[in-house]
Length: 359
Length: 251
Image (cartoon, rainbow over all chains, first blue to last red; front, side, top):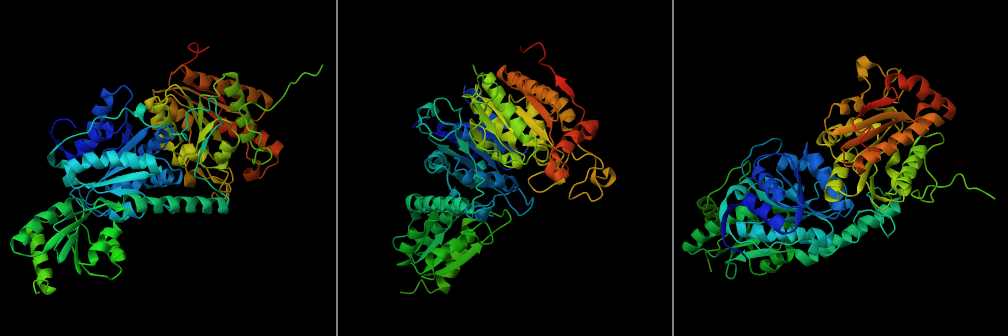
């Protein structure tokens, strides 16, 4: 690890990506994530083997990633809501052709053009596949600058290991906020294990095809099941959540990303009032950390889902718990950022309404 | 002594083309494979087939092939070439693919001067989907979505994509040819060779537009379809060198 530096979230992702061996970035301007593209443009220009392309569209950018990934590079693009929608065709192709790629979504208020304030309204889009066809994408949800460093590195590792597109799901607040961070040593992409499937010219080997058209229905079915088995393996291997003050908790807040940081502040305030409240923070949104939630439900009978949306992760919490505990919800969509005091009040209300203060 | 005068090119697989009788794709595939062999670049070539009739090109070319989403060939080829600048990358695209859904990707790749080669097969119709109007369907031409023939007042004019691309400064070589006669086929092969050489020399974006018969969707016999290219299609899309900034630079 190097020295501590004060950096904004967008720059942290760019630096962490380059240090993870990313050598290809293509993107299109959209607020609130332009700082990431700008940082990456400079970082790639400093490298002999780095490529930055400001593409003519979001669609062109994701398709450039398809090509660069076919050619074996670690690749990344970034955007926000409307731009991610445009990329979905390409993301479906990446999933179908089993090509590694990292996609950063700095979420903003939506639907439509919405606004440029921090939001969590793209949870469904990210975790349900987003594009056409039967596929999933890995979705990582960092909550701090330092976690951005680690999860950006992980995103590239997962993408290569599972040969699948990986999302980093942040928001405008995380992108702008400056925090002290430390970076790991950079990886030289030439030191990474060779990928035996890439297209680099059929020299001394049979020619290769990377494609997604499978006209024979039985072949497409086999491919779908093969992908499904891969997704099951990912669910077993990488689902992760963080907990905070849950040992004696009677009410546990479930929140991710920026919402989780706000919730943490609220929990500190509630603890000062003597309320036994904790936090469960999913770090992987897909795969969703089901088991962590189920285990907690043995002790906790009330969960409060807090999201900067009208309730999307809420569905995964309910699906995981299958009625084992009560699930309450509080959401602020549209780019509104709640204060810890506001959430503390919600916690207080639910705590007393559910008689959790009584022995 | 028996002299072998005709054989399968080295970089075509031993597969039977699925293309309809009289279709130009088979001839164009063969020409590309011959050029790859003659330029001795088979171990360096990566091809990008389109969505459309030629999507199955990867079943025929015995070189590395990576499928592109519909219309995005120039963007996919850009990604490959930027990572592997010493390889030879070509996209193979039909008229709907390149001149309708993929117009933006094509113009901007050309304008950036991406060192890739595009083979643009113009048969004036969406072939694989059953004969709908293409951006290059000529005025009066029948298609399943232009009842009574293309009416330019209703359906717009056929798009001269190659002429449009010629104004892009990064684009250095564009020629329009046809595969409608032995003479035109030879001319097409020379153009493909020149386009690949343009890339080998790293000079910029190169494109060959090839007018190609589609007897099935034109509802003509194979012979009549070839005649129709020479007598009708060339009036809208004249066979010519549209841009050449490489003459004298490449051998």
